[in-house]
Image (tube, rainbow, N blue to C red):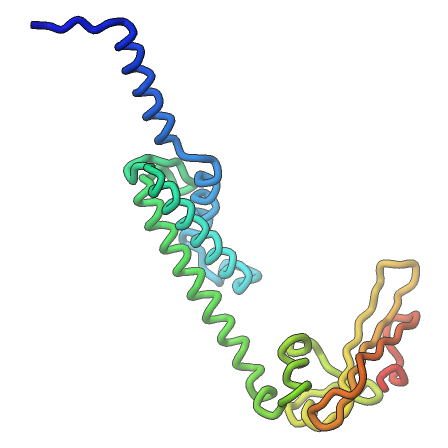
Length: 211
């Protein structure tokens, strides 16, 4: 025998179905995270002018995507939900696999390039200690360092033996260029006093500024 279903019951069923569809519609932040990660699929460091920075970005975008997907799944999003990406349609489960591969690829590129970069600093770290080592690691390892009279310090031994470390730069945004010099003094490996700064007009600091 067929049961009679009231209009109210039918409406209730329809609304329930609609609610289910809405619940499975992915949030914008999740959609954005998946899209951002999909950009890095197939990316290679040789394709980039800044491979280390891009590797780090791929790593971060992959991790963000995974976190967003895991959060959505924990709140009831079905792994079979289909999402549109720059690489075409895929399920949430497939999108997560994609984001894992992006994260891992980014980690490898960023990690390898960081390790290679750090290797060049080791000869300097091996001969420095105390304040000199701290200043080198925290601020100066990527900068050209000058000694007395503006002589460039090139070797680890020169860094170790010099009682003066200076950096210099030129600000050309004004009407005339302005040079600046920052200098640190040392006794052995210990810093003496605070940094001394000097400025003047011109494209290059004179040798007398390095003192």
